[in-house]
Amino acid sequence: MKDRSALARGWFRKADSDLADARRTTASEGPYDTACFHAQQAVEKYLKGVLAWRGLEIPRTHDLEELQRLCIQLEPWPELGTCDLTNLTSYAVELRYDAEFWPPQPTAVDAVKMAEQVRLCVLARMPPDTRP
Image (cartoon, rainbow, N blue to C red; front, side):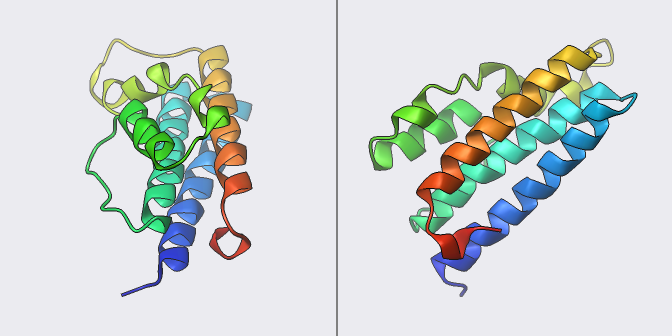
């Protein structure tokens, strides 16, 4: 079995890949629903990377607020607690299956900014050997 640092690094690398896709799509002509989806996926993977590094079982959920709560329960983490992940959580399913929901570019920009904020917050707390 991989060590916890390697597991976390794997999650963070996947998260960075999702964030890169979200950034590229947001900077282009769209489609912005996929940018929002990839921003959600990035945040989910950053948070799951924290749980992996702590040696916890990774819950099979897309609920970012639940993952955020789990991370904050591990130790005081006020910076992470200020991230409002409500909108991002809905993008995990709604964007893939709601044929009527087509977010505009400003929505995608906001989603990417939140993912970038979570990335900075998470990686600042993690040891160097976990970073992608």
